[in-house]
Length: 394
Image 1 (cartoon, helix red, strand yellow):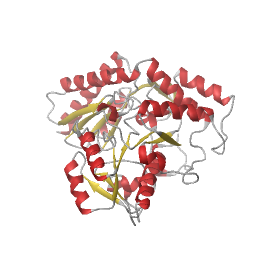
Image 2 (cartoon, helix red, strand yellow):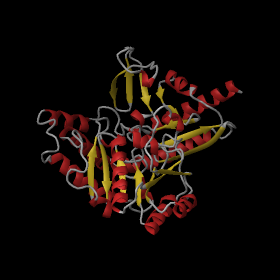
Image 3 (tube, one colour):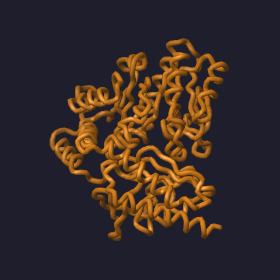
Image 4 (cartoon, helix red, strand yellow):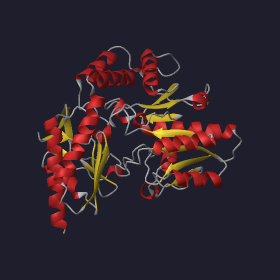
């Protein structure tokens, strides 16, 4: 199914999905697939989860939208819940991760303006991905996706990922830095997991220089890492944290949470969103948080992720083309020494949906509701396909 009425920014798409249930989706020919990418880390509860479905039905019968000119009870409930669970002070709701990151960038800019900086600087990382709006595109460390959109906004400094010393050097050269924006694990950048103390060292740097530590948890948040937020593995608090994707389990919602001085930067009229935090999206998110807690899915993500890593490492131990197998919770990547996009189609033929990021990393982001047998199937199938692919390419 294809139509010229759609812009061609997604290229040719050869699979049409028409139904989902649990950890599976079906195409228009009736073929079933185990979804090991979960809408790119969105459907953490799988597809059409009963709790989310019921919340949406109930809210759709009651009230869909009123705008932020008025109080919205579900929005206030969700804000209270997120603040309690995160350790932050307040939250701005948006419709996507990119918009949540835009809010974070605006917070940093506003702080810089208050400090009298003509062009406040934000430190971002090589290999990062923060979105496709002009500001988040500039923060993204991928020249390929930036091409054709000049001029990009100024005010960003780039440093190597997992290298706090490089950021400390930037501090000596740029007195107008106001924030560091970083992913706890680089998702689009290839499931790159930094040293365990990386976030702690960044927290210390930001405290030393009076910068905001801003964490992009669009992909790592909502339980996927084995904690509700990945920074909770490090026993620190950021000044700003953004989340989206898994928060709505398919319903568009984003959130930018702030703490301390960052929580006081937005004042009446300084930022807004027509649809952000509307009743429908907030009811979905509340159902997601309830389910994550009631079914112990966050703890299960940590255990399943460790099991998936172990199984992949065992089954790929003799494959010389495998450079690294890494992950945190149910963010898992297998890095090869060559481009490997063909493996996506090979896996599809075996009834499993995966994707390849950074050109050479097989990325696995399965639902947190994955069963033990499904975990084993993913590990076995992906390992077999990688071995077959590398033999044929030799």
